[in-house]
Each structure stands twice: as structure tokens, then as C-alpha cells.
Length: 194
Image (cartoon, rainbow, N blue to C red; front, top):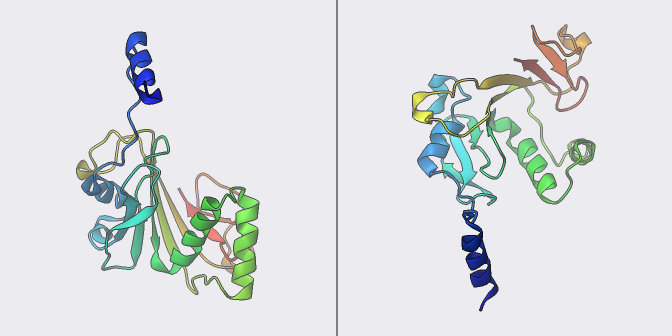
């Protein structure tokens, strides 16, 4: 008897359902859910990257007609998260994903690798402010056609390369009731708005 047949029989005898292979949601669901972080006026034209299979690579699910790129929720990670960013951040975001896929998972190591490439001129950062919209929820059990899930949290960031408190007048201290500047002085400095 093959090993898989033995496993199936043992599972049935134990009265436990065999775990189903994780599947990515439909393309339509991914597109509708991926654009939810954006303002309504920007959703229809955003490019959407998502997953054909759970744990599979990001692929283009829809071409865009405006400057926004949205990442669909990763079905292999619990909960729901979608992010949409200006295309001027595309190379920076893609490089972070490729470094993590290569096994470089510590934030400091990812930041160090990207900083070396930015300094060398091989990784370009935006020359003006660029937005990143994020949306988080505890579950993927919602209808994206009906809008944002109940209890979801939003985050808006504006990347302003090399911005500091002195250059912007914005506090670098984390605040919950007003915008603040994260990573001041870095190429990926950004204004956090919750």
C-alpha cells in the first residue's frame, strides 16, 4: 500500500478530516479585496498582484491604468492584509519581497541590503512623496464587493525619502492621535497616519 493510502485510511479511522490543501481565493475576490485600502476613485484603475495558488508567487491579476499597485492578501498567512502603493515605490517594495524570499527575513538585514543598493544607485527611490495604503482584518471571511470588512484597521503612509523632523516639522516620536515620521533621515522615511 502506498504511504498516502495508509495516511488516508488512518485519518478516516481516527475520525478526523484530512487537511485540505490551502487554496488562493478566486481572482475576482482577490482583486476586489486588494483595492479596498484605496479611496474609491482610485480602485478601478489600480494594478493588482495576487496569488494563483496559496504560497505561490505574486503574479499580475489585473493591469493598471493609474499609478497605484495593490497586493492581494497572502492566503498562506492568517488574517487579511492588503497594501496599495504608488508605482514609484515598486522597485523598493519588490526588492524587499525578493530579499525575504531569498531567506533574508530580519528587517535590519533587508534594510541594510536595500540601503547599499540605494547608495550604489541600483535601487531607485521616489523623488517626491509617494503613498502606501494598507488595510488589515482578522479574517478573510467577508464580501469585498460590500466594502471594507467590519473591524478592519487602516494605515496610510507617505514615503518622503530622507525626511527628518527638521526638514518637515513632523515629530519622529510615534503618536496615535496625529501623524508622525518613521525612519527619519532614511531613504524610506515615511509619514504615518492612522
